[in-house]
Length: 442
Ligand code: PFF
Image (cartoon, rainbow, N blue to C red; front, side):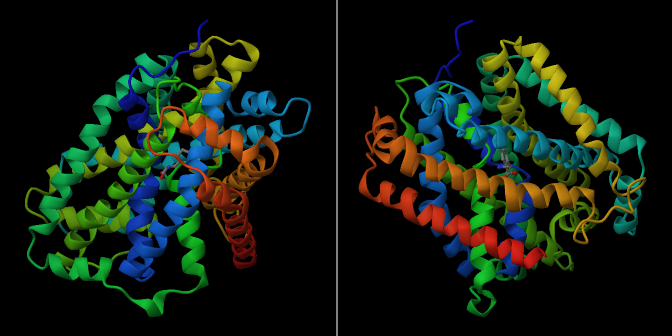
């Protein structure tokens, strides 16, 4: 079968932006910004996105388009008879692991969207509600399965009829809901306190860990280091331009992360709450905020739909990595590969799901199963994948080849600075963050 191509330039940009914009933007970014020095963090983060994220984003797109293969096939094609294909294999493994727990969390989001419809009674103990939701079994398993099913259905339908069609509808919805939530949040009395918490520059909160957090977040949020962008890039045609597309993806991803903070903190502070981290902020603080807000049920529903949409347009990119591998390398039928892998990944997601009930005794470095999966992905898999990709491009395939591929049809040309960044700055920065994160966790 002929390999599909995105049918429009914007199809690819939306799909790759959809991959980038996910749970990372909505529940991780606003909180780390608020607690890591506000505008000072933002500046460091944007620097990391431009100096480290952008070159790797371009590299992955170039590898993808040049080879028109899944990550394993791509490395095999550019470096035949060498162990470089293992970098692709690490990517496929990461896709597998990240998707398994990502779907569990997305499932919580879906179930909260449904719970929101009836509205939450003021005075509900939201910490207890969340605790009882995640430590039950039937409901989280049902929603995890439902979310995996949606992911499988999109990927099974193909690149143009599945991914591209879905992101063309969901991404505008995502932007629209974000703006509605911002409007609601900013028009509450006392909203300013939230903005001050979010953005007030605080240099005293900046230390070495701030840089580590900024760089790790840049990687996760741009979906780098696991071949998702290689895979999406493999459906690019010669007419598409890589440098500009990567610029759009970087811009949209940063914009949504930044804007999510405007939707969240003004409301949290206006209604008298303290911000919490990650799942606590999303599933405990925010429902409490919505419960107190005029038209709260509607905005709560919208927020959890936003979370689900953001998660879905990311999860499909993870499943696509794994499915493209079976389709390209073993000639599997796309539908069959999607269902088979979706099923398998569903099972791999059960341990993190049950980590709050049956497996609650499990501890690794003090973390529960879900945090353990997340730690391996964020601290080991993605940075290692990104590091090896940069080394591959800088020293094996050659930055000249990458530049040539990336510049085809691009009116914005890359050259010297890209080569310098990919050969020296990106590898050095990643080695430093892996080392520091390991020292910190152990
Ligand atoms: N970029 C997504 C987020 O910010 O939530 C997560 C992600 C998606 C990571 C796809 C890796 C990936 F391949």
